[in-house]
Structure formats: structure tokens, C-alpha cells
Image (cartoon, rainbow, N blue to C red):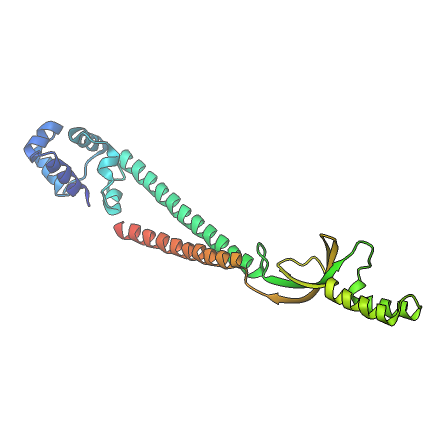
Length: 247
């Protein structure tokens, strides 16, 4: 919208004819007609007179003018000040869109990397197995060496064959209680855990790669944040293009 169109719009919105507004503002009707038809450009004093006649401030009047129309009024300090402020506001808005979009791109990409590398939630599952409970006075390798120890006792004459068979059967029946655990962290190839009646020694059996549920959620969120960054850059580009077209 140019200056003359804006002036006529505001005058008619207040229900004033050209003669009536000319009288209110204290200007010639012929000069007012030239202004509304963009055949004349107001001076700084005349611009203030028109604002006084309309009863509005400079920002309200200038808000609807095209950049081309504003460019033809730069000799008016109020217009020059308004243009400078508007340009600064647009630059600030553009910076906010760019910085916000860049931050979204960085955060989204970081979230995807964190999900892929398992930084917050492990993507590995470790399987540990324990053959049974080790009593307080027994060695950690009791289950591996029990048969050998029993055979040595037999050879030393400490027990009979019948007693050896009974001990082996009892040990197998009452002591061998295999337990398999899966955990997302790896404490090492072996670790010991206290239980009722003694302790269990767990040995790492296998390791497999999985995608933790937390990483799936992090991956989806990262993709959304990353996409929002690209959308933000596109919106900033479109707003800038529209501002150029309006200019």
C-alpha cells in the first residue's frame, strides 16, 4: 500500500470526506487530493499535521505501507526511524529463526548419534551364567572341580565308592542350580553376587547387539528435532522472500 492509499483508507474509516478532513487537519483540499492520489509527497511537518488530523501515531500509519512507499518518504525523520526499526526487527527475527533452527539441527543430530552409539542406553546385552550357589567355605571353582576333588578323596581313602557316588548325586541334585542373567552393562568376564546361603559367580557367556527401547525413543525424538531444524530454515527463507516481495 502506498502513502495516498493509506491516507484515504484511514480518512474514510473515520467517516470523513476530503473537505471535512482538510478542514480538521487545516490543509487545502486540493493538496489533500494530490496526496491521496500520490501526486505529491508530504514534508515532515505536513506528515505530522496529517497524523494529528487522523489522531493516530506514526507507527500505526506506517505499518501498512510497502517498502517502496516508505523509501519515497525517507526525508521524513519519523519514516526513516520507523524503517530502521523495522529492518532491525526483521533482522532480529531472521537471526532467531536461523539460530533456533541451527540449534535444532545440532541437538537432533546429537540425539541420533547418542541413540546409535548407546551413550545413554546401552545397545549391548550381556548374558551371564552361574552354575549354582557357592557356600562360604568353598572355592569359586567348586562346580568345575567338584568331581575331581571327590575322586581325589576316594583315591586318598577318605571315602568309599558308595560314598563318592552318593556325594556326586547329592551335589548334582541339590547344589547345581543354573541361573542365566541378561544385563545391559558388562562388569567384566566374571563377577560375584551375594545370595542367601552363599554367593554366585557369574561368567560371561555371550554378547549380542540390540536396540534399547530408550534409544528407539531417542532416535525418534532426534529425527523430529532434526526435521524441525530444516523446517525452521525453510520458514525463515520464505519469510525473507515475502519481505523482499512486499518491498
